[in-house]
Length: 214
Image 1 (cartoon, rainbow, N blue to C red):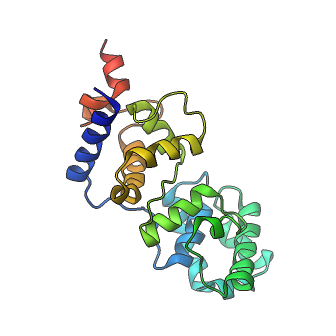
Image 2 (image 1 turned 120 degrees about the horizontal axis):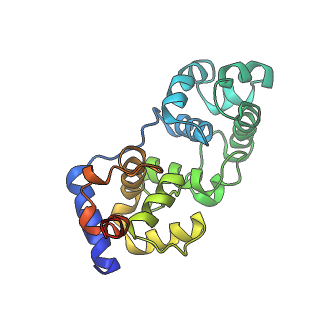
């Protein structure tokens, strides 16, 4: 199977079986999603979803969050991984949103990465989810699954390299959704240690499965 055939098969499979793929983080607007994604770094979405309601109730927008002190915010984030850094990042992010963007969450990758706690992956999530821009966030699931299936070569050694190859080969209209397809597949089927190959509908296109059968 050629790479283009593999992409076509994988996209067709996900379009049929996971047509409404979306983030599992709970949010009502761009501000809430940004807070949730910052908190989700090296933490489960489930834990983040348990944590954010109290944050959103006390700090309903960037202006309110910008006025928070470390001592006020930290107890609400204590159960999240790296709470010290994330508390500082959230307050710093809100400060900059107020000072530089008039309180409105920017929706370009170039602007978002200027905010504390926001790297390229987070910026790609925000722009693709909120605005359906053709940006591909590459987290550990996307990085692993895309290489394991064979969508990108093993020599693609960085998230940016994987991102560029995926964006190049996935139809633009599908990119914002493909991010979730790959994350959810990695979270529930293509597990890191014990992938559920027997239950996977991508067997005919998966380079890893084809090699394991030999």
